[in-house]
Image 1 (cartoon, one colour):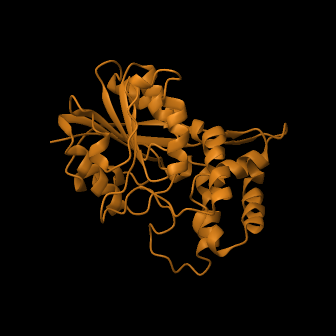
Image 2: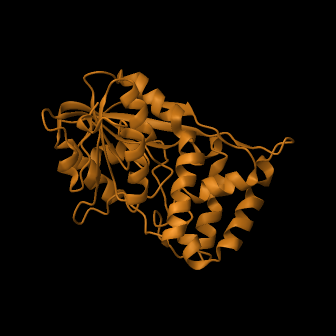
Length: 287
């Protein structure tokens, strides 16, 4: 494995990113993402990897790789992995996870454009854009990033897109509504401006088509969000970036209060919080 992680921002692309909160909050939320929230999507990662047979010979690029858990799982299967993300604090955690201690010769970590993430000796053959929970500025920006990544991959390479399943099967959808209501109390924001991710039946297919990709199968997987207590649930959900717009216009204490209230129906007798969700993935192919 030779992991490569770069900070990524394509010119005029609206790349996968979020506006940085103040440094102490950013560091805290980065740790909360890595320690609490990111693991909720492991079933999504594993389902896609099983479907594609990820292993030795796989050269995988993760768009919006965050703190690197999906890359770590692919590397454990024998894949050569690289990742791009706009959040430097998350990338630092990814480097900690993916850099073999005492074996720097097996690791190449660079900053730069998307091209810097491609393996030096061979083209990519898998690209992933997993994170429906995270900072996505615009669908147009993701389309541009996917198009650029596809240009670095072999013809017929797999591109995996992740998204929410049907809203009626995602308990967390109602909780995330708090973010949009607080960020836009008058309902003036355009669709997609407050952390929206494609979640309709055909949205991922439309995204693939816009990026010049050919759909080649899809699947659904249960990804319940489970937390030790309401406080952990609040911290985990705030770490996704989906509440950043709300935090810009509402005091953090008020955001936390309303989020905790929205979580109350999902708190169980033992104090844990459990929200069933279904996520969807689409496998597309480069042309």
